[in-house]
Length: 282
Image 1 (cartoon, one colour):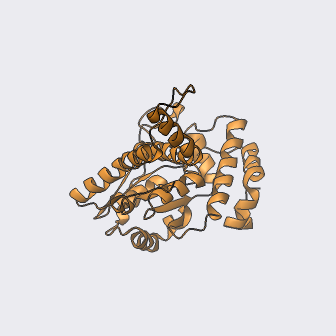
Image 2: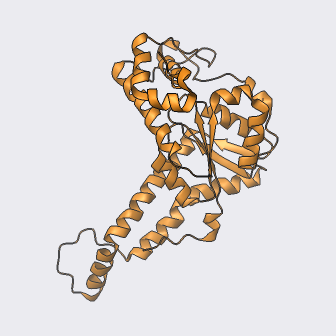
Image 3: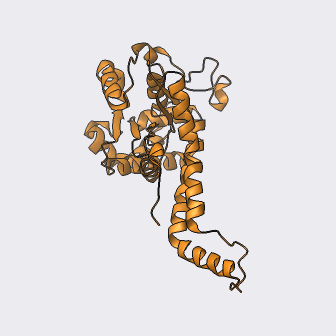
């Protein structure tokens, strides 16, 4: 059955900041937009809530498409007193539950949009450092006026930062991390959607004025400030032995030859095509 979404919900237009993996620079873009005159981007906790709801909603849509006719037939039989089979999971008509879940799904985005408008920040959104392509497609299907900022950073620098944060601690986790970066970037480059803005982290740092203008144009945010670049924090307050820092900034860790080879094995072709031949670690 078709998904019927009231127009009120279709006006929701979150700005979603994500990347191939953590440590790509999504926090910097979040900070830039939140320091504007009219935008506020929430962090990964809100992103987790909306991702969880979205995954559940997409699962329900597939379930209702697949099993809805059977649910409806069983309900009619039960209503008429002719259902003799064991049906402990007896359902109401599909339209009843699907419509209820539509309203349920949009309550958090709607609340955030209304709250943002009430405090003078009508441009709102959230971030998650590693949304997959299908997750992004789901966001944009359910909130078609949404926009995605996809931040890409060189894998060598990303891995060095992840190593310092203790996100990777052995050969297996390094290989898995590098493969995720390469696969997720490749998938996003194939998405080809004008609601997605790709931002190269290195160019963002070098061409700050140009990127601020691009972010303002893409999101509708205004008054982004260069001062947001000056805040240098990338971890929690605490012990460096567990990936934290007494200053909330932890320097990238040096990579071993084995880790550089892992980058090449997992991501050599995409690094070469995306950054050029000199970018692939040797």
